[in-house]
Length: 161
Image (tube, rainbow, N blue to C red; front, side, top):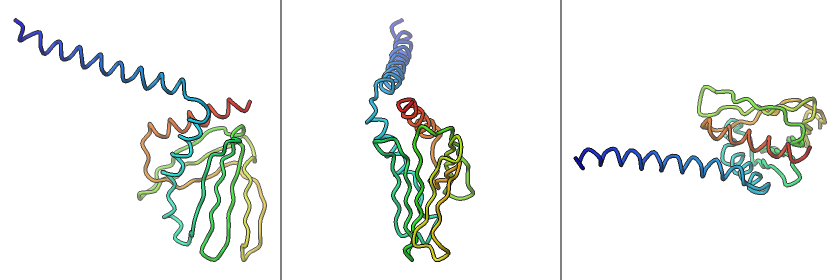
């Protein structure tokens, strides 16, 4: 008789363990402070950015700043620079576009032409313009991480309103 209780007890303990992990994970995100959200956003952006789609790219810098800007600066081998920046209060939504190879695109959208686009040292001339979408090449990413980034951006946007 005790033999039949053992598998049932294991199931109950496993279920209780899984419930406690879910409660801890959900509870932790509810108590994360602004700095933790910023750290997570920067970790995601820096780990996920895929520079391999632009072979002439010399270096890049992508960050979510403490004053709630998303900034991307790309420097190419010939010295040309591209700079993108927008304040998180203008964040509207994001899409994940699946690519053919190992790279996908994270498309960040703002409410209007709120993304600053600038080029420097461009042989065709420097340019200043505004855009509504910022396409960021990213490595293949799990849906849970994408949802977490969306949650981060929404949290930080709420802090600025």
